[in-house]
Length: 239
Image (cartoon, rainbow, N blue to C red; front, side, top):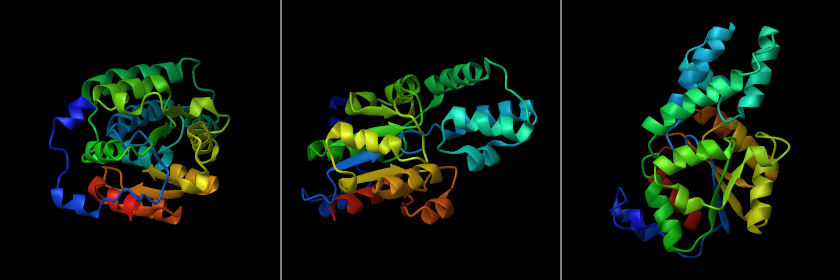
């Protein structure tokens, strides 16, 4: 928190006038990839290359449209069904090894998200992260960007539940762990699968459509309220 407190984080200080301690929600649940950290270009570039090598040609943009927001095991199941093959036993390990190296070197925080987290912390407003990614990947991405210490130990992974997004299990697990009723939670997502999971959990959802991969139509179709910049988020939390 010290690192954030020492910086001028708000892109536009006029936004502070809209903030109020009387928030509409008791818990803010953030997705990780594409919401907190700009990891999607790296992961989709690697995944697209490996899927293409397996026999299903696609580029990075097509990969994001096909698999965004899902666990790698879910993606692998679809690849195997599509190609009617069994992927090598070390396929997942190879994917993770490649993305971990690149993420440790390249990943950055989503623009403006540090400011939102700083304001939540200032207001003592509970927040957590609930991601399809395993914890070791989040240690890399949130660690490199300096966000890990803001969330730990309130970090939840799809590996902790039976069913990943779009099932509601992960968000319900996070809400239960935090002692908050689902209806009092707001989910921040960038993927259709996550927005559908929030809806199934009985939670409101904000869809972030400010990244390289624009899923706004799918997010809107899943019931999310759209923002295109993180500076827009506080108005939806505190009004």
